[in-house]
Length: 190
Image (cartoon, rainbow, N blue to C red; front, side):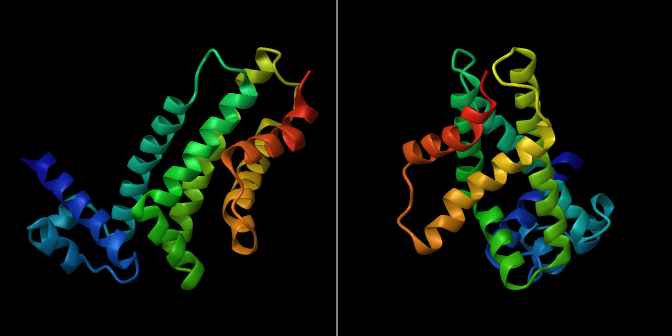
């Protein structure tokens, strides 16, 4: 029963954050959506920030799982890193909650939202870094600072998919993979 209530609260909060954003969501709204008393929320979560953190933590698990599913152990690192990054950013853009949170950070700059989005980016970078470390151990790519490389890969991907499209025709998935290979992997490949 307790787990069900907690789940109800998390789902209600995610729904409210997705619709109204973090800042515009109140604990009253969440309680009403979850069909629980406001006090019940506080038995599970200290505050709204704690609730958002819990939601982002489970979202990170979902994103990593989605990226893993996009990868194929029979393909080279270059293809897998592209598949994983593309899936991660697709997930981020299409998931209503992350889209709303990204929009809120751009328009209002809510610090609690900035913090959880940093946590999300950190998890994505760690995921990519692990894949880079494996590729280095296998001899697929030259030794490099895997954390910086993961950071640059993520930022380049965001730039090619999100920023480029602000003033240009969107790039195809194939073109992005080609550019990625040209700028990153040809320089790293043995």
